[in-house]
Length: 324
Image 1 (spheres, rainbow, N blue to C red):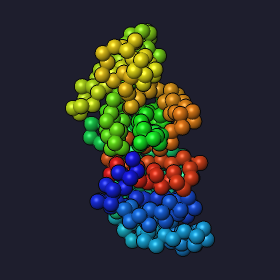
Image 2: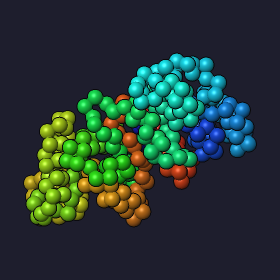
Image 3: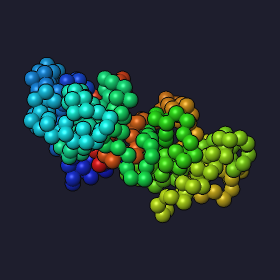
Image 4: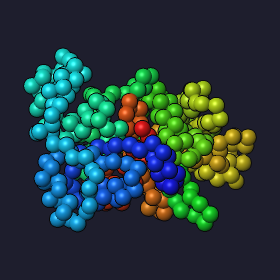
């Protein structure tokens, strides 16, 4: 999967903002990206501090772009643009103060076209990444929410197995409307990573075997999502997980389904099920989990786990750039 993404980026190189420019994990990932010449890191922070941190850790970041909010030459223009975006909600003075923080500054670099995408959160919360993105980048036309998915990859003899799961990180208790949007966005994301989506809306029921409001919600969301999908993308629901992935169980529980038994893109009813589900796949199924990949924004903005390592930063940088 990553080989294909890198080839695409080599044909159309991108710039990615890292909001924590002195973090050793960011610097190690940046050095590796620079050696590949397909993705240029834009490191936010004091230039002397960043170069000292890189030298101290032994990482070559020659070729990286370093931008310090305190000395940024286009700060007045950035403040004016942000004030217009936050009209009636933040004054020019408040915008200038916010832009001294790397998460807001980095997001505005993407908004102004100085970079293509952003990866942050190695040292701060998901909310601190998502909030500036919602306020400044905003959701795509037709989208009402930001959602997320995880890409799960398991190496096998002869190739890789790649799955998509959403929403496992953002929407706590999505409505039926939210679930429709989540399904469409996760399917689009899955295609970028080489998955031909067969989308299963998951529940404790398969085609009416169980009853309850959540069952009805997943069934209706699946039906509505199918009507909005691009040609060739298949959706079914509500499905229990065993019916979604096991051909034998599917033959018994929902014979004739064009998704059941072969699903590779999974939509969960809430964040608890989603978070538990992807972590079971990661820990017991030996899948590598990449994400959360944020969906629905006008530009790719992604979040790192505060417990991430440099290899995860490198991988998420490639994934983030591939979305731009």
